[in-house]
Length: 390
Image (cartoon, rainbow, N blue to C red; front, side, top):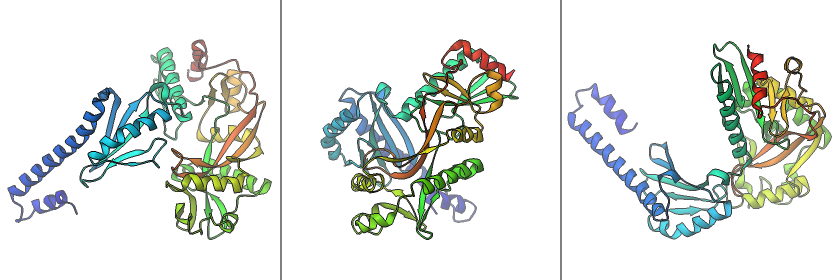
C-alpha cells in the first residue's frame, strides 16, 4: 500500500492529522520539481544543438517514468551518429546508452528511482520509412480526402494501430457503414497471426492472443494455415537447434528464448538476439528470412470479410470487394481474382536488429490484380461509394 492509500485510509480514523496531508502535498510538489528539472536538463542539451519544442515528445509511462523522444528528419544511420555525438554529454548527467533498443538504441537515466527518463531518437516527416509508417500516412490521407468530400453527410474514422478496420465510413444517422482495409502495396502482409511452440506436446500452435480469440473465424483460419504448413513442408523443429547447441536448451542462447508457461513464443531483446536469429534462419529457412508455401488467395478475402471489412483499397491499383454483395453493387472484382496466395512463416523483428522476435504467420499475394474501375484515390469515385450508404 502506497502513502496516498494510507492517508486515505487513515482519514476515517482518529489517527489522521492535517500535517499528514500537508506532508503529502509537499512531497508531490518536490517530486514534480525534480522530474521537471531532470527532463529540462535533457532539453537544454538538445536546444544547444538547435532543436526546439517542435522536436520534443514526452509522456508519462508510469508514475515515475517519463518517455522522451527527439523527433528528427534523419535516416537510421544519421540518428545512430547523432546518438554517438550526444553520448558523452548525456553520460555526464546520468544517462546510459543501450544499443539493443530499436534501430538506434536508447538512453536511460535511472539513477533516481522516482524520476526515470527513457530517451530515444525517432524519425519524423519523410524519414519515417517503415512500412507501418507509410501505411499510417496513407490511411490518414485517405481519411482526410474522404472527409473533405463526404464529410457533410458521413462520419469518417481510421483505426490507426488498432485492430479494427483501417477506414470506416458511417452515415450521419449511424444506420449504415462501410469498413475498408487500406494497403500501400500488393507486397504487404494481408492478415497475420503469431504462433508458439508447446514444449509439452512438442508441436506448434496459434498463439491465443485476446485479439485472435475475439474472432473465431480468424482463429480457425490461422489454425488451417498452420496445418497447411505442417502438411506441405513440415514445421520447423527445435530439436535441430538443440543438436547444434543454439536451441532453447543451450547454455549460451537458452535465456534468449521467450519461454513462458511451457511455451516458446520467440526471442527476447538482448545483445545475442541478432546473432541467434541469423542462426535459426540458416537452419530453418536455408539462410532465407522466411518460409513460403502456396495458398488459396480466396482465403485472404474470407479473412478480411470475417473481420467485418467490405472493401480493400490498394494504393496505385484501386478498390476491390471483399464479398459478393459489394462486388455486384459496385461492379468491381473480388480482391483475390487473378492472383495466387502464399503463406509466409518467419521470425518477425519488432524494432531493431537486437529487439524481440516472434514466430509470425502471414498471408501474401502474388500475380497481377484484376483491373478495377474504382479507387478511393479519385475524388469522383467517392460519390459512387457513398451510394452504398444511402
